[in-house]
Amino acid sequence: MNKEFPKGVYPVMLTPFTEDNKVDYKSLGRLVDWYIQNKAAGLFADCQSSEMFYLSFEERVEIARFVKARAAGRVPVVASGHVSDSLENQAKELTAVAETGVDAVILLTNRLAAEAESDEVWLENLKKLMIMIPEDIPLGFYECPYPYKRIISPELLKWCADTGRFYFIKDTSCDLTILKEKLEQIKGSQLQLFNANTSTLLETLRLGCSGFSGVMANFHPDLYTWLCSNFEREPEKARQTADFLTVASLIERQIYPVNAKYFQKEIGNFCSIYTRTKDVALLNDTAKSEINQLTRLTECMREKLDI
Image (cartoon, rainbow, N blue to C red):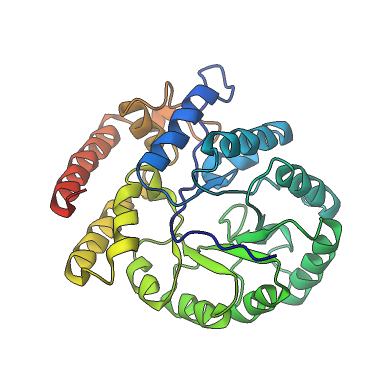
């Protein structure tokens, strides 16, 4: 199998809910269209930003199916959706998500071993899981921070690349030294690295990173797309843009994903800011004001970049 994902921005998708706690597919459809209109290269469904651990198995599968259908060949869709502890149940989840037609199924690195277990245990479990799922399913990794963050070592990542089954990794190490080593280990392979961390993004793009897959693509994916596309052509503007994006990304430390849903409601995509993970009342008037100020600053950056 030879599969290459377009470089650029892969937003970690939100899941909109109705006020009575059902998945709001009308809002989800608007969200998919908005990402694509704002130049996303692809979409990452059923991830932590999607509140994956709070979705039922049926909801995870249906969301992947819906997003893939709504994208309608415009951009590739990758999806995770496996939250179980046992490898048998993980294989069931991953196979079901794959059957929705998504372009790659993403494995959570923290599902393959307990926090205290070694890389050797992790690798043995990965080998077992790979046998349990069809060989023709394109795979990827996500170093999901919940319930604990497990960073793949550069050496393990090379092993994975050498299998020929892995095509995508969302890296959350936030460490330029580790990122550089990983990029060196997978150079020349089909495995592409997408950085989730804004502050190291520009440097990793220069080192061969394929793009960005992080929280802030729920606020201004077009600015990240501009950076990914123009970092070599316009280095001074790229530096200024990266600096802005890094400072702007501090909004992540607010009440996420409530704040992102508030932004999406403000621009007309969502009908509700309801989440299953946080109390929406935590997003007070001051926090809302900060998001509104960020929105205005983003418009200034768009004018500067002629977007």
